[in-house]
Image (tube, rainbow over all chains, first blue to last red; front, side, top):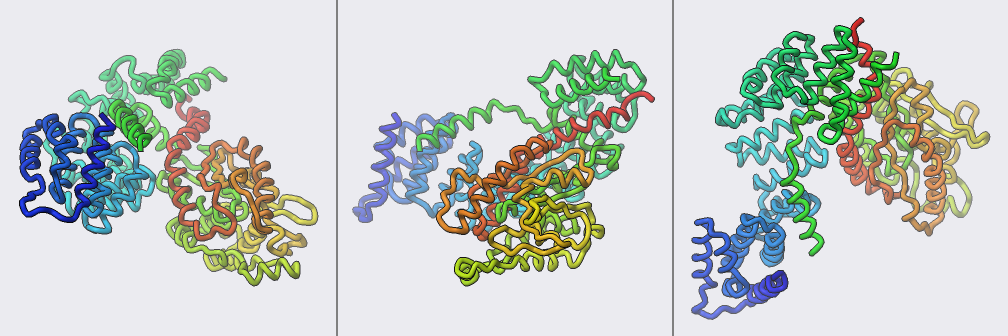
Length: 316
Length: 318
């Protein structure tokens, strides 16, 4: 199948490169129109079948470029990213100035973690279209992964000029600023995200806001933000709340927060052990710490901390 | 091409299987313990020492490492540097922002650290007259003025070697720029610096990673940034390249033991950047950032685990 696809793509390359066109040639507009109709109706297998090697050979110029794009996207939608990659790569070679083609290829590579290949593609797009928000977003994410937080923030800011309605981008930008310890700006960004979000999907932003407030020294506000999330059963919020209450020496509340968690939860056991240590109940603390130490597969760092702590407690 | 497609399929399937780790147990506990740790004054937590290795242009990667450490809020209590590590360390300890260090490192060229040019090189070969490392002194003096060690914002030490005794000389007092110049003074290329009745050359020959120096400053937990050359992949052909190769092989042997003495290592992959590759300093800076960012959480965890004994004292009932 791969061989046939390659032959078809090579044929398409040859045809697209042919300069002369007869007067009756409409560049395969009919095939494209039908394929587009299938694509819009989510009939991706039909698109793949229609734009088979013969189908592709019927397309020329801009129609071929669009054909490649919907074929690639149909492969993506049907869980065949490797096929989509082949299609986009041929399209990018043929239509190296087409922003959409380069974007699709860059996005696919970036989301697959192939950032070294994606980065130059995004940069090429920005040379042609300096304000392209998707390319700025791609570079922002890549720079963040690599550790260039300042550069990433600049790209996020440019991306948001065109993608201001994207709550997820505001939240990612806020998270980046949190990582870069620019807490005040991070707070503004996550509040912006929260103002745009429907209540049901705002847990992640609320959790982030709580983390930011805590770093700003507003521990009470941060803990208060977690309360409704914890009540609604958010495991992350319950864990964070228990830890933060322990940190704030609100021991009775921390004890109550632990009870809301599963009795085998590693963080619940850790907090309980720390509370037991505070009042000199060493045996209870050891029991909990040893139970967490066994959970190294799911929480290796937590298990290591508890194992070391258990050893320290036993050493006079 | 086929390999790329295979990689893509593997990456995508791995991503689908991965669980978003942001608020995982480990991340929440690390953040909680990290906060507890770094808010403590030194004394109630182990003193953190940063050892910056020698490595000519490669060692500009230390600036990238420093950038990541600062962004992570890593407490750096004392610093020691050898050769180029001494230049970076002295400027950082003088209080120069990392952004400024980045600008200085990115703007470095072959002439920055020496009066090195073609004419001088011919002169070196024909007349046996060594070059002067005066420009290294000037580079540091331009950046931090005439500061003395005791006037620096953070305790700092740098290492040179006495050419007549073979001793490692650790500088912790006096004029900073003069000491750094001695530390960066590549033997065989630059004339020895006569300072305090000693004839000093590059400390990289005896102390490639200045672990002893940073320990002398009181460091209890040591993070070493190491920018060693991958000498096995280099086949030198010129006099200068051969000299550099010999120094790097010696440095590499020395660093084996020093690596073991550090608590945590960050090793930017800059092994193929040579002494005269000043134009690749930006590449070295970037590699420093990427290498440090990859391991910063592991470094935090290592420091937390090392400090657990100190922290646990405060957690137990009186």
